[in-house]
Length: 314
Image 1: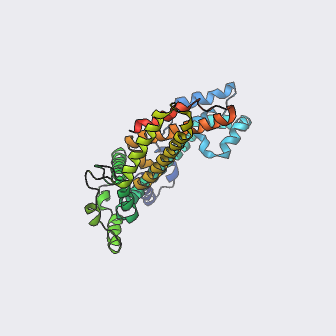
Image 2 (image 1 turned 135 degrees about the horizontal axis):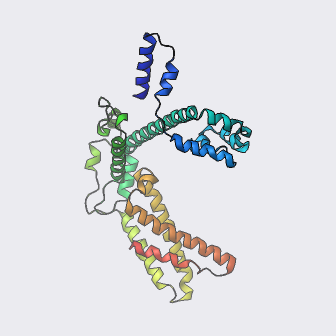
Image 3 (image 1 turned 180 degrees about the vertical axis):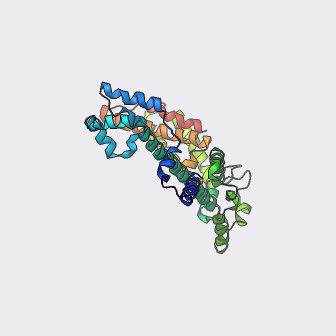
């Protein structure tokens, strides 16, 4: 809208015979940096910091030029004097650059959210993801991608609320009516699954897959081996083997789950998954430090107690 307004003003001034479009436009730029604070930062050059005002103006985006200013003390104070004489112009230029950077960041965020929404919505038509979700099924749990889609939808609605100017009324923003999703739904008719079949194949409430039963067995077995530790030293090698197997199994489970969710970002968006992953990562670190301590110091029980966290999964 800002660019369209500028173009309209330029056209009007050009039609009126004006020649000072650039100067008039620069006067309309909103200054994002406080001029008084900029003056104070510029005054720090008196005590040997002649580039402080450039830091305040976020001059590091200039790249090597900013580095050169710092290394040469703002071009041996010549640049510092020039900046002081034209500090208003530097503020305008920096504000224009900052506005463009912010707009580019918002555009990138919007495009990313829309792309991810389409990607996650497409998982419901992927037969591999459907089979994987059923393979991981726990009681009363639906497809993981639905949680990812709900999370993304909340993020998208929040982004729309924070940036209403990026979504004109005539622009279609309903993610459920995106043309890309409709095309994806139409293209899925020749596959092994489609939009109508996905809800019908949803995980039944109370059902549990063989993998889920085996995962529960590994949890109980791991908890049992932790409880048996210290009773018979001859069994320690077997108990440790079960612990290592459990850690590898839980890590692989987390990796497979992240695939079903559509990525680690959506997998870790669920608080229960964060809790589970924490109980997987910390004991794994404990096992690694145990092996390292055993190799370096001849004893491996310095941080071995971290393994007990796996019992909390029960």
